[in-house]
Image (cartoon, rainbow, N blue to C red; front, side, top):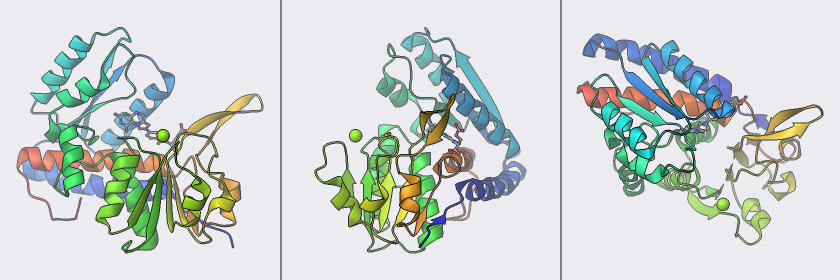
Length: 295
Ligand SMILES: Nc1nc(=O)c2c([nH]1)NC[C@@H]1CN(c3ccc(C(=O)N[C@@H](CCC(=O)O)C(=O)O)cc3)C=[N+]21
Ligand SMILES: [Mg+2]
């Protein structure tokens, strides 16, 4: 058996196209574009690449994008001042402060300063609480993108056994909350989990978000399992480097039923969901109705 390869790049392109169409309708109704503000502190090259692709994708969907680049030595106070200014700017529907931030800045303080109704990353404690409580709010882009891929692949998820490997606020915890809301039986595993291989072997769905290159081996998996690989690890390869996930892709191919590749899997979905969240924010902020479930 060879696993189906889940084409996240194509799924993301389809989602971006739907968001673009719905944004055109929003613009006609609201008389303005949806706006996303992205804040980048420092010059980390990988972050700069992501921020550029977010800006490009935002504009390709017809939305307004602004990028605020601040020096690495920017004080926490100056960053908080910018966030408050964006909170108060009616042209800004969504605010994303690129993480990680330099060490002298308290990330939690910055996230807490973002207006929860503009928090398109879904990282604010109010949105984390809304998700945990089953209330409407913003859901973090990466886990929501993973859920979309899973539902497109499997349909109804209810009753399935899911293992989420990783317990970050950005991926693992919200992913577990989403799967629970879909009536999966959810196990959250992490670096101290005993016999991770056995936990993985019991799962119909494995979401790997540990940040360790190729840690999850093919022979850990239940035959036919659906594997979502959130990891984006740059590893040495000959003279240069290449990207690998948290899953040993080649090993998993002969066991899994379906698997996301890296690159071309979860990463592109993250950006497409960011646009979807920004459009949702714009509808709410402008008081424009949308069809339930359409965004
Ligand atoms: N506030 C905040 N929100 C984020 O959502 C956020 C962040 N900070 N900091 C960094 C991470 C990382 N992230 C990615 C988005 C897209 C790809 C992506 O499109 N990857 C492509 C290409 C990867 C490549 O070639 O480098 C792929 O996987 O196919 C990857 C990673 C969003 N992040
Ligand atoms: Mg961990």
